Amino acid sequence: MRPAISRRTILRGAGVSLALPWLEALAPAAAVGPGKLAEPPLRLAFLFMPCGVNPDKWFPQGTAEDYEITEHLEPFAPLKNEILLLENLWNSNAVGRNGHWAKVPAWLSGGYVERSTGRDINTGGTSIDQVVSSRIGTRTPLPSVHFGVDEPRTGVDNIGGGFARIVGSYISWRDPHTPAAKEIVPALAFDRLFRNGAPGTNGASSPVQRDEASILDVVLGEAKAVRRRGSRRDQLKLDEYMESVRSVEARIQASMRPQPRWINEGDLGVERPAKGIPDSHEEHVRLMLDILLLAFWTDTTRVATFMYGDAQTSRNFSFLDGVNSTFHGISHHRNEPDRLAEYETIINWHMRQTAYFLTRMSNLDEGGSSLLDNSMVMFGSSLRDGNTHDPSNLPLVLAGRGKGSLRPARRLVAKEDTPLCNLYLALMHRMGLHEARSFGDSTEPLEGLA
Image (tube, rainbow, N blue to C red):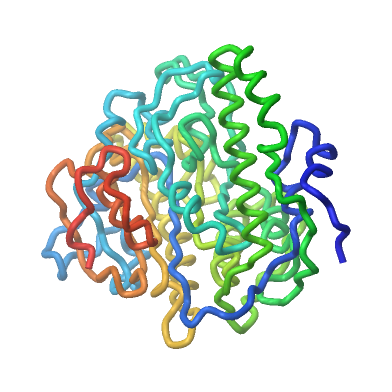
């Protein structure tokens, strides 16, 4: 039994810093609500690979249903019936904004990223995962999860156009100024899922007794006075802070009235990883992907992002045969055969890791359908070609059947220069945001997905 803690007590205990993990620890350990869902929920994930591809080894010849499997797509050959190969989608706001950094936050938002020293970050939009999780996130213990393998960068890349490196360290943005923190340590990512007890078990304690007044209602008078005295930057910061508190309150209230969740039987065999980051990069990546899989399987969240690396990842891939370079460094291959071969080897490795993840999803039964059947997983890059920094016709794959709302096993060739946000608008509708009329620079929901 957890002690009764009023909202005012929480406010006094946390001072002016209402840290999200601390509040989650005080919330009841809700895992299973009043019942089980009648059918599996729909999940949404985005897997990001930096530095583009070799278009000659990615984009195939053939028809919509009968296309060749190119070298880059070879790891996906056994999954051909589970994927949509998307073509001619792009972010127009990424044009001329820098080779790498500014294109990363635009990948999931379509926003126009401003140059900044890091103090006044403006990525021009909120990412789709955050828009979706803000609507459906109260149905699960975690609204969304965000994993990666590279630590966030600091400083400004003056060679690369004067952009703060932090913007290229995240694909998920809560608003144009605030990235959604990603976890890169496997054990901590695992612990985040199990903070309130093992998902799928009824470990709920009695509800926390709370005052009816909101934290914001209690401090609103003082907050308004502070806002009047503050600078414009202070006002923006305070508005963001108050909105964050309101969001946390909504999650706590939802946890008091837990909704039914989907309960899968069986053990995935994913144990808590050892402390720290594995020496093997492949082990690190697969651990993070396994934990993401566990998050979906246990219905701990229905929205997730994963970054294989930041905008200019310095990850050295010399553990691969024939490679002696970093991914970003070799992406500037200048079409030299030896360097191009290294670049392609690194890309193919990323494809194999993604195929591993999708195969595991397709092998997990959820009462007659697979976890992949009940998901929409997009994999791709914010660059078509790392050598030229081309942002047009991005390399993208959409896997899964979206609970019957997607028709895979084909190419979907959209009209040239179709906004990528058209796809996101269509995915938002499938995730239940039916009233959404636009997103980013969308013009209409992408047609032809079903």
